[in-house]
Image (tube, rainbow, N blue to C red; front, side):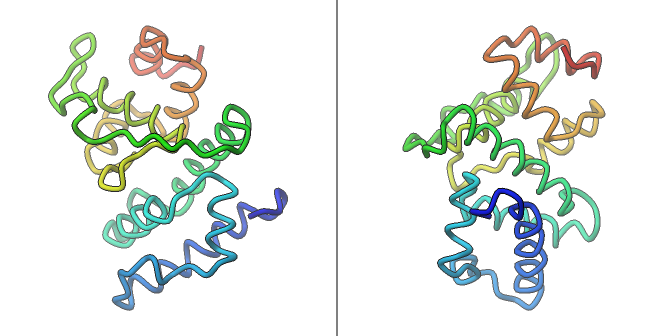
Length: 177
């Protein structure tokens, strides 16, 4: 993935390989990656635990979300943010679960929206707590209910630059601004 042309193909290969490991009973994700794999993940701003969470949920979903394709598109949004906004520099800040809005929090009468916005911002910056996942079951339910793709939501949050009114409009209409 240090090769910009090959990063998506390598991500896909790693994803399939890690799904195989997981389905064979190996859930020690730290053992899944060699030095090259770790360097490739680092080059796109992806942490091994984040990768594991997608693999674990994909295997449990048996063909439903998160699919390998969704994981790749989410990783692409994070990679773009990492390379463009963060200039390839990893943030040392971690957003603890206690700082996220409550699961019951609402924005304009829409439950979960404040939480998923905060999680999307943390995901873009690479600041997710290891015990928090962007596109977890609650996020999937929210995005499915509103007919939004998780990678599109990330890109809208990025483009909105903190303007929740723009994000709210996207959630309500599905139209990009």
